[in-house]
Length: 245
Image 1 (cartoon, rainbow, N blue to C red):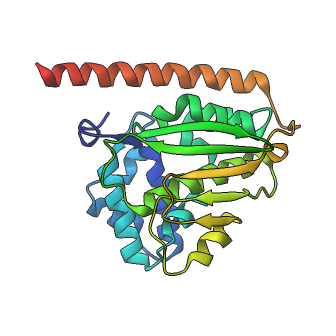
Image 2 (image 1 turned 180 degrees about the horizontal axis):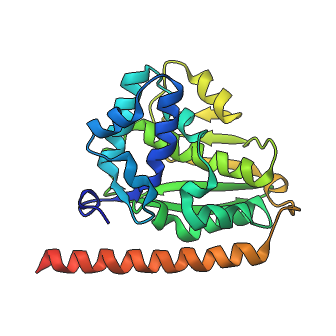
Image 3 (image 1 turned 90 degrees about the vertical axis):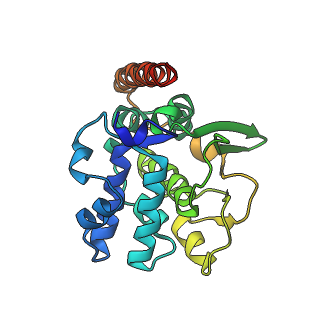
């Protein structure tokens, strides 16, 4: 774990990669911009690399400023590949259903981002994923909410292997100047200034068995993710104890 991630919440360092790819597509030098916020893009090759939530927030803020694109968080999320989530992404992709992939996110959410508290709720013919955040995650920029929702949307489509539109998306962020851009990128009605971040799907759309499901591969990657999470929690706990001495 890096020094940047010792204090406060942290997230997978590989989340910087889709941001860098989106910057490059829009004509911005990602190495220079990432460096401006004190991060080293070369470290993305290290699976143990984590970045502080504060640093990632600043990266997104600077990216929006450099590109002039207020929807940059969603644009960056579209660049995500499953390996950015390490073994969790591979297990998610091998899930029997889209819903099973979401259950894996709920189980291993802390590995993705320590401030993230995802939970699934079922009601009637709908399933909701609520992306809750630890109260200590103060100062999260709106683009960070966009990025999180965009990543989930992207992974669900990759898992299904075809187009998948949510019933609705609620975002805990101010109304942007071009809200229709969010609806276009998410292929869904979007509610802004919502009390929580939530994605809703029809149950039938995400519980259909997938021919690409591979239980054995998913299980192997689940075991790896669980071991990685246990190791991360142990290191974090040790660091917290040392800090208190």
